[in-house]
Amino acid sequence: MKLFAANSTERLKMTFLSIMLGLSVLTTACSDSGQSDDQKQASQDDKSKQAKDEKASGDDGKAKQKEKAPVPVEVVSVSRGEIKQTYRTITTLEAESDAQVVARSSGLLQKLLVEEGDLVKKGELLAQLDIEQLSLEVAQMEATSNKLKKELDRQQTLFNRKLGSSDALDRAKFEYQSQQAQFQLAKLKLRYASIKAPIDGVITERNVKIGNFVRESDILFKIVDPQSLKAVLHLPEREMSNVKKGQDILLKVDAYAENTIVGKIERIRPSIDTSTGTFKVVAKLNNLNNQLKPGMFGKVEVVFNVHADSLLLEQQAIITQDNRSHVFVVEDNIAKRIAIETGFKHNGIVEIVSGLNDNSQVITTGQQILKHDTKVEIVASENVVDKNKAEKSTSVSNVAVNH
Image (cartoon, rainbow, N blue to C red; front, side, top):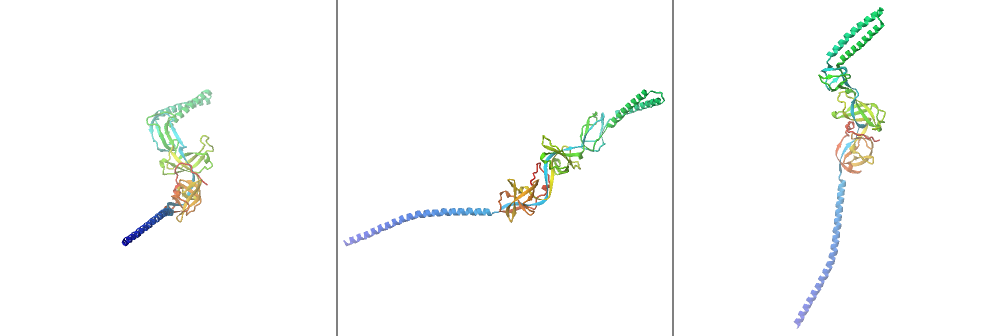
């Protein structure tokens, strides 16, 4: 009995310990389960915040890195030089001194002494007609004239001696004078058989061949004096106040594209063509080498004004917005926006009236994306503006002028 009671007591203890241990585990499990959910939520929140912080930190780093990276630019130094105020237009060259050589006698063309392109002087023999018949006519007229002269002298002697009538004397005078006129006309036709140049110039047309029968009034040659070539311009009414006699013009023709021919305004028509709204200007050209020909098409710049020792800058460096102009200059590798005033503009070169000085380095490439105080890096530079651009003559357009 004692042994049974002892075993029962031992089993009860073990059962109680098991129950207590189970309750402890269950309580611990429940407690651990509640704490795990809170900790997981807190951990996720911490991770999300950390990710956001890291992303923001990365974006700020990239922005700072981008902001710090200098912008590559090209610059040019301004220079001083001459610039023109011009008006551009087109012209067709015309010769004021030209002549059509017309036959003034009839006959077969016996000799041809010049060709197209030949330079001739006034009075130079160009062609010769057959003069055999004309010479015979002159000889006949001369003989008849001599005969009538003797009859006139005889009638004058008779009249002086009171042996002849005044009517007979008058008739003899009339016949002699009439024959003399015909004789002079025959000699003139004989002289006209030798066809000569009426002016100095170049043979531009030959319309006859050897053996052709030439009639009076036939056009045989055309001669043009290349020194009389003029550039005839038609300018709009608004330019009348700018055009003055003696102003230079700069001419270019396709045949001699590398050369610029200089001329001077010679005449200005003081009236406006109501149908076109233009007025006529005639300019004399320097054509010493006879390279210009009548009918050539040319591009012309009329030089209204010239500014010497002006501050010059390339057009591409200037940014214009709302009729205001500005540039970016480099100072200690920092881009500075500078407002400027411009003057004459000519062939991509602009006169700078104010805003820059002789030492300014102006950005010519990359300035469109810049802001004031942007850090830049100069990757290419030119010492000075190409002054030759301001001297050259190109394109056909009206050159605007800002003051």
